[in-house]
Image (tube, rainbow, N blue to C red):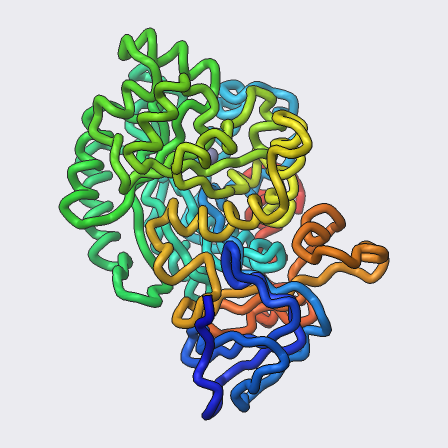
Length: 459
Ligand SMILES: [Zn+2]
């Protein structure tokens, strides 16, 4: 590949002296990247002339990558991180203990949790995140999330989650956090009309996301698929996450989770699913052939201890595979770098030392995530014309001492690593490892207050 900028004229931001991972198979060992109007205007080697710029950052030889893409999260859960009573529970016990606490969330607590989650994601090198918001006890919670993203300048793929099957109908959640099919569909249409921006460079898009086979009815799964087709939006859900889900699907539907997924019209390329731990080899092939994406959440999988997706095999089959940090009460951190490192170590532990490289993981965390979100044309890479979402990685001299031969391997094998500079749509949101938004302290104080209210403890 030999695309680069027109080197005449000027740009808004120029980053020089960087090792640039532009895209899979395209790296510049010492180069510059120019940004104008929120897009990558061009890249080049330091030996080639660069445009003049309003602001220039000397990266000092550090690694620049596309911003990482988070394909699965539940940001509201950072209100109940490492919640002591259930840190050692299995998934279904953990959920049933936390649902009554989560039933107290409202517009204010969801705004705060989303703001804090996105700030944390920015520090971990993430510039585009989905969020599966499926608990809707009060208020207009997705609206609150979109406000938080807008206030921070974060690129946000909101997922209108839903649950219809409460304990009264054989499901897990209490009745306060589920909604009727009509409520869900009407609110989904409202949110798509208001926030889904299909235009290039969008800052907000919307997917429909019934929670899981054990918390929504088949009717809601089918209706959501039909609505997604009508408005050309994407579909997201949890699938094949837990052994108890297999039992549930056999008992209630008489089929496996993947057979059920297919039966309700979701086996299609507008869908991506979280976890996907328990498919058969034949089901993996069918999902890959249909173009269904998989959000791999290795830390959550290891903490729950039930297994993990075979991402090497899925990638080999051609399935879009991205990385997700999962909810902040099951993984508890929100660093995509940490999640990427977990993906590397888990894969090699599981499949051997030649099974995965740092570049494989970086490809999953960028291009792979963008494919899951159907946004590969302009996110997940830094080719000229792409959205200017990127990270200059930090890392101390101590942690990188002796790592001289491969900056991409060093990025994931050394550590801990965090963003020195995070740019979203051409705007610098993290500089010198610090969130640039002046509301951070105020947001953390308010978040602590809301968190204490939910948990019934003193702030
Ligand atoms: Zn999840």
